[in-house]
Image 1: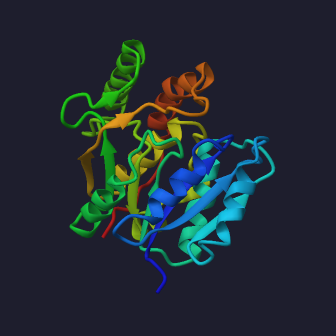
Image 2 (image 1 turned 120 degrees about the vertical axis):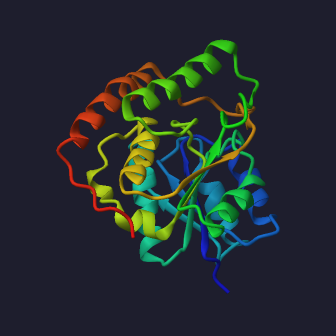
Length: 245
């Protein structure tokens, strides 16, 4: 039986992590399918995924793109695929084990129990981050505070990238009009869900910095988040949001 739960993982140069991550997700006590959005990694990540498709033929899917096109466009590609293929719960997470795959069960349970969007939150119960230097912890924490100040959302972890959506949320969002493409994409998706009136719940997680592979964080990503949030808020004054039923 096909699972109604899909996990979308964008990859770029994740050969150290991707096989271990795939096997971990498929070892969980609840059935998930996996969709890898692969941005033409020069390290051979795609080949590892395709070799594992022989073992997990029905549940492991891959979309290969022509280059590094951005986190936001990767997830939008995955969301559209998920909607076309009738999944009820669509999760997003990183490939590097900074998000614990065991928490996928808790996120989907939150949606089964009434949440429309469940966020794996680093800050809902203190600061739950492991192996980050203090400067990065403070930058992340105050970035979330900045987003809350600009948007007025009551979400503690506004930049979180570990989430589960009910299908109806992604159906209600015009995905082609999501403007932000880097990590600020995560903020815009939460903001749009919130403006549409969906029930957003934060589930406490422990975030652990990657052990293998290189971080994708950059100054450009940070600048997009700072200025993109202001532009997003400004655009919202002129946009009509049809509330969720």
